Image (cartoon, rainbow over all chains, first blue to last red; front, top):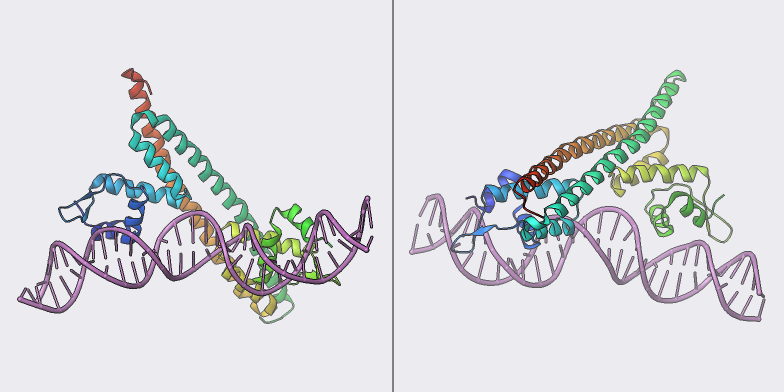
Length: 127
Length: 127
DNA sequence: ATAAAGTATAAAGTTCACTTTAAGTCAAGG
DNA sequence: CCTTGACTTAAAGTGAACTTTATACTTTAT
């Protein structure tokens, strides 16, 4: 069982953020010791890594909240949870496509700078 | 020359956002008519599309601000602007890599759901 | 034994990127 | 003429996701 300090070292997530995630219901079943201090086990770490992946791919807190709520409901929500993940997968794929699309525009801009610089070189203008 | 209404229709960007971008210095040389109303030309549209691409790829307002400031400085800032674009390109590529990395985790989760569902099927548990 | 470090809570504060509001100006249509 | 609709500004408000603060209790190290 790990203290919150250990978990911040392992995950790189600040302690206030871990408390905030827990308060918002993103981390189910985090235990406490006899004095109310948090104790994290391997399953908690898995949840933290999973929540981090969802956040890093743009899922809002409220949707993760709902997902965890469904998880707590038990097996009857498996198909709904799977659907949430399928939809999120589609959103990530769209984000990737959008990034590639806009990356093209940046590359076009960079190509223009190359032309500009070679022109400046040919005309002996110093920059 | 286009009114702000026309530009919102073309770009899908809300008029207050266009004003906000201009106020923040993200859109250089937007003209006005004799009564102070904005008039956008083709070059303004290009800037709007460019700024939109930068925003969509996560460049903060403050960095775009700086880029436009350098642009206004003239040719002496070309190499610095090109460097900004090169760095931004690297950031976009990193974002794409991160998204793929986290997409893997979501796919892993989805695979678990597939296993779970087939187990439920085999044991005749209805969900 | 006691100072320092760690943890807890609730509540307020911060940052970013808009968005809305309030109050006013101006041109066109009935 | 006067109302309607589009435009202007400055300033306040919003929402999301944390982050900081204040206060108090506990654990650890010297």
